[in-house]
Image (cartoon, rainbow, N blue to C red):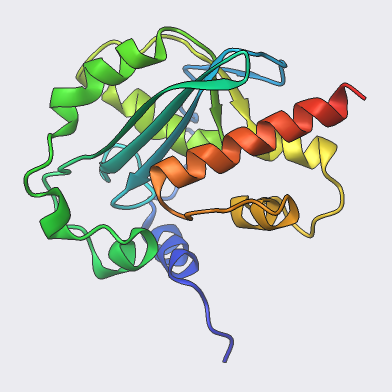
Length: 204
């Protein structure tokens, strides 16, 4: 039997338990503006979470890296107490244990700080709908602006045709990048490199 990694197992479990949409249910509208814009100033954002469903699952780690002129300017990187159980599957994926977050701040304590850190800049994320789902779930805590969001999955599909897929790990390996996978900061740094690589190829 083919061995699956923990994230594949988690995704299957979430698909099996996800509520089914009926024909009369409209999907939730996007609260952000997807873009393929090439910008020089932006914030790369990544969340590690207790699961895949924004709202019911919670953020356990924030990675946000601010780039000005494509140079790393500032970093927000911290664990978050989700006030719910972190499963063994999530611990295997992220390395984050329940005891690691017991003394960490809750998302209610840091959500406003995250919005202030972003300063209204465009956001760059890999598989942006996932991270944006968790970001906009915070609008119950603090107002979330309508950000311009650049998804490096979509950008890489357009620019990088040599890889079998456009997963973060695959692209990191293709670009020969060091990658601390499923760590919010590690994923941010690789996402930034992918974005900058795509920009350089599009300008040729």
